[in-house]
Image (cartoon, rainbow, N blue to C red; front, side):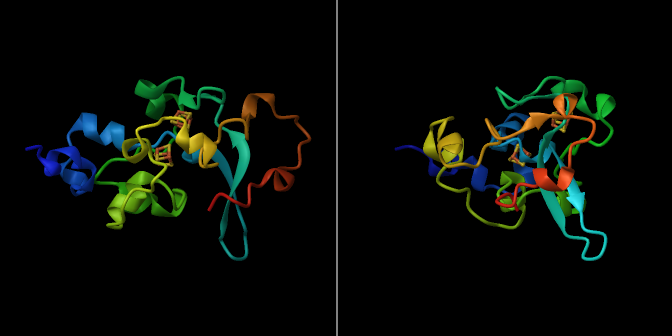
Length: 151
Ligand code: SF4
Ligand code: SF4
């Protein structure tokens, strides 16, 4: 008989996950690597189609993952003991956010679907949707680059 508790380790509290499990919990959406705009009046945040210069926008992978906190001091390095302070900056679909809030992972999450491309098909990956900040025209209008479907 298989052990469902082990199979569904992602249902454990965040602080019970091993380092490997913690990394596997990330769905790889890339949304947290997008620049955001904040409305000065409402303080509401908007995700833009402009990605951190360290994001490989084709693979949707950080090119300096191990050193990201050093190379990009704006990077959100999420840990069990700081996630609460980052909730304002994380998308509603972020797996860490969902589990912190006691919610289930969505069906398109790689751990649930078993298919790393399902997140792309379901429109929850930034793949094919963003440009690197390094390729942004200097006079680009950031408000025109807001992605209204990322919350
Ligand atoms: S440094 Fe890496 S993980 Fe951090 S925002 Fe940039 S691409 Fe994302
Ligand atoms: S938003 Fe959350 S789940 Fe998506 S890539 Fe960032 S840390 Fe991972």
